[in-house]
Length: 134
Length: 277
Ligand SMILES: Nc1nc2c(ncn2[C@@H]2O[C@H](COP(=O)(O)OP(=O)(O)OP(=O)(O)O)[C@@H](O)[C@H]2O)c(=O)[nH]1
Ligand SMILES: [Mg+2]
Image (cartoon, rainbow over all chains, first blue to last red):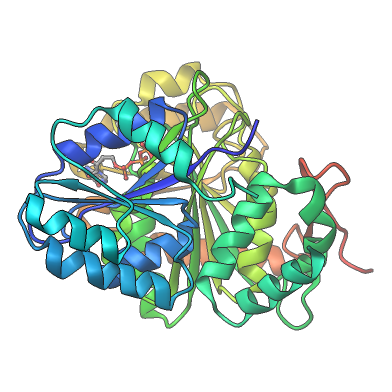
């Protein structure tokens, strides 16, 4: 019985809708994970800092309003600068097909569109979290 | 392994937050192998034992996190640094948890003087998880001037947090009067300060019940009763002032604050090391 996987769900950018993020948080809790939710409109710096303080295994980024090509690479870079590139970074929300590959190349592990189920996301997390918990 | 761990401790002492975050996970996940190394933390020369330790407990939704958010504001205005540990309940069915306290403190996210860590209770009863005692020591050793612990909402259970902190605050809100009467006797007495939060909603029933219950416990040490409106930032400086005075008194009388908290052998509880006489 390993320690629970820790997940941070963060919403960068300007949109203030967090229904989807909260549903995901509760769904992953029901899958046995410890989920930290930090609220809407988070800055890149604050998201990465929360990753440090909370020592999460997974960062789920939720973004509905566009801006993924701006925010996601910045977050990935800052994670790396802070020695946090072991964190599995997932993206959710509406991301156009033509942008997906570029984001994955930059280090987003997977992109889950609006139709994705919680169990699909949870299974992905369980099979990709590196090395398990200490 | 131990050399890695010592490196992490050194980094955490020098302010690397990801190292401090990782150490907290090790405390939560890997007690048996990390505790022997971390046992040195409560005696960091020149540093350990200095933090003012505040425990915040009380029923769900009474305003604990909002109150902590406001206390952080007062503490930071004095130029002091603060570490916060927020404990939320784990689901007994799945072991999962949503850790949502920190969202109430979001205006401090960018402040380098504030370190916030969320912890799930992981099956511990009593309002704090097993790692919390050691995590408090760690924040203290890392130089935080004030360490605040928010427990899971307390109902009938005893409040273990009192063993880990210098001063304990019980936060209640209007409408809780009836519940208070049915709570375990003594819940008020273990608190050093009882806060009637959400005083903007009227304090009538609650203030009356508190007065009645306290009147019954003759001779016992009575907690201070303070009214606040955390949401409106009312009464917070007064509360912090009261906490500081209580804590100073404790230190002067060598009551609790004089000794440091050590993990006992199985790492599951804390014991108090008596101050050297
Ligand atoms: N009217 C009023 N509402 C308040 C006050 N303080 C907090 N609240 C509200 O009470 C609700 C719960 O506040 P929290 O700070 O999350 O309470 P908590 O005790 O930390 O809750 P749990 O951690 O879930 O047990 C929120 O909606 C707050 O905005 C206050 O002084 N007056
Ligand atoms: Mg809370």
